[in-house]
Image 1 (cartoon, rainbow, N blue to C red):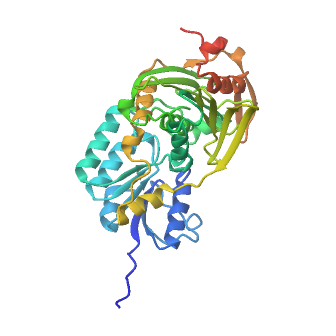
Image 2: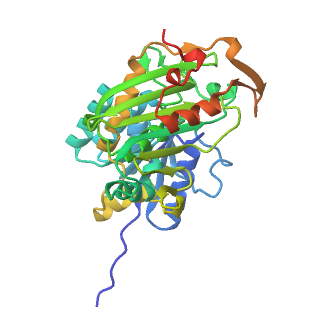
Image 3: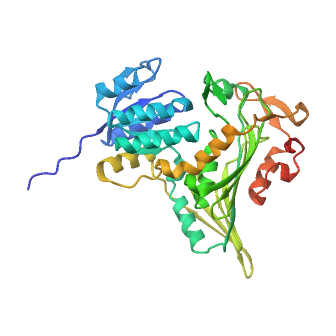
Length: 387
């Protein structure tokens, strides 16, 4: 019998290999060691030096993305670049026949998102959006619990994110902290970027991941930092099924906490701290509340994209699974400028590398929003009153 020949590793080009892109670089290397891919090229404005590439081989480097795609024959492009570049770079990769793993948010506007998805479909390539939480096996498990009535009828979904970021966080890149830059939409902000996973995961658990699943989006965008974008915000999405989905998030927490999503039912609730892949079901039992905890696996999104390209496996996070999230991005983009919080409502504390701003009482408000499906103004926050 003739031996079965193992498939050749897929050549990968990584655009953006510093900052968060470093995690993609290491993940490509992990899959390279398994023989699934080959790091063929890195696109950076300033080439990585020997120290940055230690143990990672000697890939071709260039600041010209399309030239790099052509020279390497890349089958996959991993894009970890500024938000405002996402659509154009995805379309460039598609023109060269490369499948794409694209960092979130997919685009800075719904129009750009539609342009990008149409171009990808026309080119016949695959695109996976980098919402790692949607690769968690807990997400379909929770959806099955809801569909099976484990916590009764679905009442709504709430999410909470309380993170700590200092002033240096908004100086990490030229586009950071901006809603627009040089005339182009960026739409950075707590809901659309650092805690975007909370938004996308809450919508997925509500069974409303697509753009057409969204009927209404209400926003309360605020900022304590001296930036354009929001750093403390709440949003409520009403789905086509009438389900309210709220997300309250801040980068000005008193103490950092693990973000989570809560699915509310008529006979209980399901809590999902999405960084851990753990599911906690709280049911109302005859003897009182009953709590059940299960742990789930997670599928790496680049590995899934490789399996899709080589073996036809379904993508975990195709663009259409992020359409509802992009409706939220569009609502944030078109909303009034984030309201600046009065100095009486925040204080300064030492941060990791620079001072950080802390909004008084925000941790409790974020949790209360997830528990009650209410916005900050409805919870009585004095700084969130209607304009």
